[in-house]
Amino acid sequence: MHLHSGLREYAITSALKDSRFTPITREEVPRLTVSVSILQHFEEAEHYLDWKLGKHGIRIEFISERGTKRTATYLPQVATEQGWDQIQTIDSLLRKGGYKAAITAELRRSIKLTRYQSEEVSATYGEYITQRC
Image (cartoon, rainbow, N blue to C red; front, side):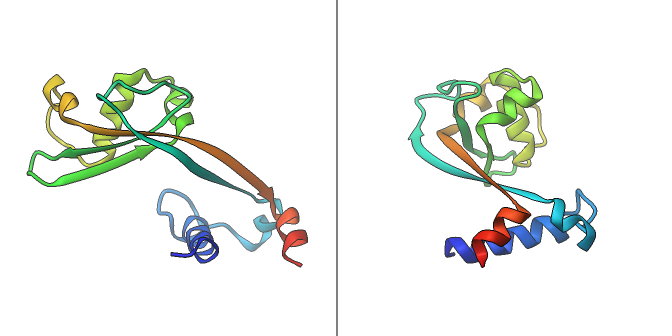
């Protein structure tokens, strides 16, 4: 997917099709700000605690209780915004990834974790219109 078309597609999905929120109205558009996180510096971690809160985003891969490979990710700011420690973050990611059974130390140790950093870029609707013309 090309960056421009991908941004357009995900902006529309976020604005109109995300079931967690009511769709954005035409009246709200002039007050909108969009933010995009640029993910960079991907590194395979040595173990599931080999990352720093507030610095690294993390992506985990694990095998579900049904034997299927599952993944989940959080941006660097998520854990600190939620007030989580590393274990709480990992456990939340396992749930986000669809893990339903009891979470054990053995499961945590089996996780393949990739850490990364991100840079957030934001623009108001007015800035977008100015740059587009």
